Image 1 (cartoon, rainbow, N blue to C red):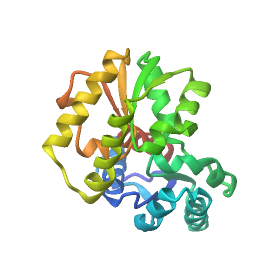
Image 2: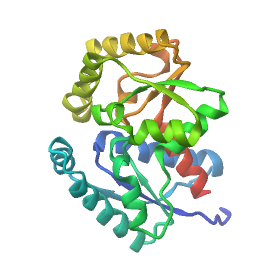
Image 3: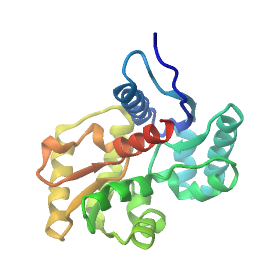
Length: 235
């Protein structure tokens, strides 16, 4: 007989893009099953937004409107029984504080989870790949630096534009291009030349294109790290 397990429920705010949300769903369920075995899987509530709406708000700088979409999603999963919330994207953590303030359950922050993994491995200077918003604005880098004492280096302007373009025009659409992988690896190498001890894959789609077998530089996949934090909370 399968033993009873007191498992918490996670509310996932996904769809940004759904390609990486699928990775979250799989990773969290696999993580729970690895710990409990048998037929165990995670107790999850998924609110998947229309990414076209979110991307339009991002492009026009309408972050308050984007925040409202995520706040409504967070309230919905809380009311449905979630014990904590995950925003399944790095970029939209720009409005994480607004979402957290609107709910009465914890928000597991992707930058904090990533910082914990870096600190565990004594990484004090790290490169950051992500959308233009994540690399150029300070909502993510400030949290790593101020809250966790980790120095962050980012690619050059033309490299940031290339990274951003590949995310939105290829990875979010499920397109994997070898030339784009080679460009990303070259950028990762350049961050190492700037003194980075490791590189954060700071967009949840990037791991669809680049992973550890492609480079000697230590990579920190935020999708996997965030999913692991969810598993720890659930159990």
